[in-house]
Image (cartoon, rainbow, N blue to C red):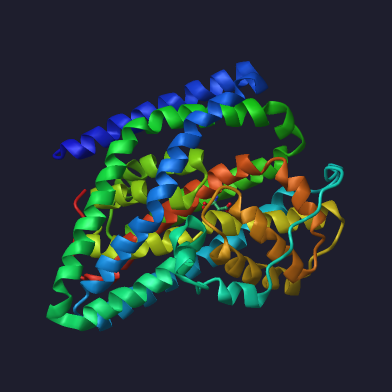
Length: 404
Ligand code: ASP
């Protein structure tokens, strides 16, 4: 291993795996008594979340501002959006298949909790406006990530158009992005402790009993989501010229962070470290990863499609092929609009259900088990961003070869 930084990352991953197992065991034995350990993970999540807006601003700002050739910038954006959309549609289709194959909602008789009111589904207008901020202050929180990306692309474009006069701002953006990446490598030393806390809480709180009623749903979700991660992303990086084994190895660190924090936004900085180790050029991943973290959610797409089929089965509603096609389209939009935070996909599920005319009460039934499903979908969401970046790198830089 040539880089001490890379070697350190492997030690951290090894520590995280041990922490995941240890935490799970303690959660299993201690049950609800150990749920206070959650705070160990919450601290980590808070630090990560705090650096997200400046990180997005500096990295996308720098990447856009330093594209002297704006046609190349346009090509990068178009290619990455195409890859994002194709993989999300595939994931949504697996979700439908998983639902039809496992039939998780048939004859299990789960009931929504008393007094639960489902969230109000977003309208088409809400979704369009979610790209644009009402005012500057809205850009400063994780919830405003999509708006911040749109703003930063415009800002970076302006700096690029300034030419030489924009050089000081470009250097500032570059130094800023390095500083924030540095913060991440510092807080990663704490990551195993966070993983331990979250793992104990997840198993302790949602433990084996609750999973029982939902066995088929959890099995369907994990089987198909892991299939997407291993097979589709393996194929994507292979097409991109990177050895899939190297991809899995480097992706393990963000995978575990995403699995336990259940937030793509919070995992963004860790995903960037992995991209660097995979050999993806910085000007590509500075652009693709923040955008991907915000809009590219294959795990969420699969989950929303599967959940819709599950809810239809629970309420004995037949979904014809026309409804299933509409479902895939609704899920594509729903997953793009999902906030990259824990449980974000469940909120957008209301939009998906409303679009195809399914009862929103179904959300309450999934609510009980959502964190278990959120873990795997978030891990897949972030992994898809790096796999797509590898392929886009290949398309954009024909001559570039990834080392193995
Ligand atoms: N937690 C997911 C993420 O951050 C979003 C979701 O709930 O589907 O990627």
